[in-house]
Length: 173
Image 1 (spheres, rainbow, N blue to C red):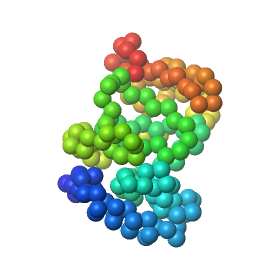
Image 2: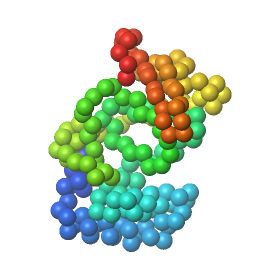
Image 3: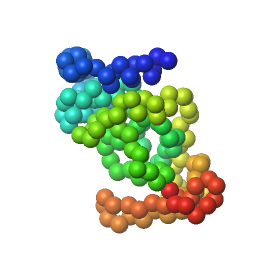
Image 4: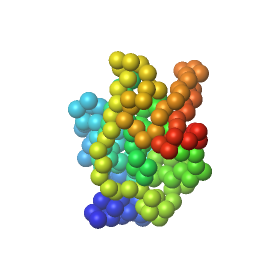
C-alpha cells in the first residue's frame, strides 16, 4: 500500500508544492550531480531536470531501479512495469496496442488515474539474458514468454524486431 500511495501523492502534487520538492531535491543532490558512476541517482535527477524542469518524475531515479544494460544484454519487464529509457539505444517489443500510458518525463498527456490503475506494484524478479557469446537474439534459449524471431538493423538508429507470442500463433508482437 505504501508504494502506490507514494506514487499517487507524488504525481498529484499541486504545482507550487511540486516546484518546491523539485528545488529541494536538486539542492540536496547538487554536490553529487556530476558523478554518474558513484552517485547515479543524483546524476540522473539533474540530467532529467535539464530536459523536464517542471516534471516531478525527474525524481524517478530515487524510487525506480536504475539498471544499466551493456551491449548484447537484454531484459524482460512484464506488462504494467513502470519504466523509462534514460540513454542509449534499446529495442522494446510489446503487443500491438494503441494504449500507451505515460507517467512523466514527456510533453505528452499523463493520465494519472489510468496510470495508477494499470501499473503493477507487485514485486518480480528481473529476467536477464546476454547474447555476448552467440550474438544471436533470436535464439530459443532467451528466457522470455515469447520467441524473438527477427531483428534487423537498418542503420545506426533504426531497427525492426518481430516476435512470436507464447501461444505459438503467427501474430507478431
